Length: 312
Image (cartoon, one colour):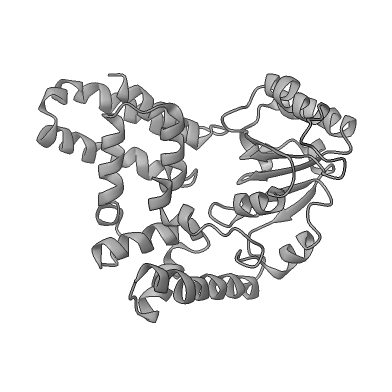
């Protein structure tokens, strides 16, 4: 599935390929020389940049929205930082990459303060969509890099970079013929979320139409989502599907798709599930309320909803 998704297929692998604001490129031009927190809205390239910066070093990748407890710090991370394997070079700096760090528990974050100081030879890089969910004492221990545009000029730089990459690289390789006007319209609609732009560009390749309504655009995604519910897949597959197709900022769309559209689909295609309609409606309502609760991780809400529907 990853190879079929434009966002994964066209994820930049080098510093030359990634679209970065000049101030960010300057901050990382010498590599990961300091501990860093990369923050900003979804689809701006935080995780992609982290993978590029860590690819040539021994690196432990932790998804903090999935591995949130202090035991991960005490065991998995501490073991990685403390032990030297026969493959490690004395010149290789070990790196711990904490993706979606806003999902880490407060207990984890409190303990992490002292942990960083105890392991001063290790470099730590974290990404987050919500800097406010990371405790204040950790801020001073990191170089904090804001991926959000801070001026109209920075917006122009990013939009131009996205436009050129799609027009000059992605479209020729994928055989996509899209007018400059439509491409600009697509970028303007979903900017700054490059991931969403590529999702809808892939839909354009399949359908030949640019229709920005969720119901029409996500026909293929809805079909995959419904298929996921009735297939024998594990939590990891569900997690990657949600991240690739919705991300934390669009879980509300996924919940809506699992509401009335899903019930209508069941009535037409899954007659033996009709009696589960009331339970599905209740689960959707409950998870919509959870999503509106301050401090709740949207990805976990999405995984929970799919998991509970699968278990009916």
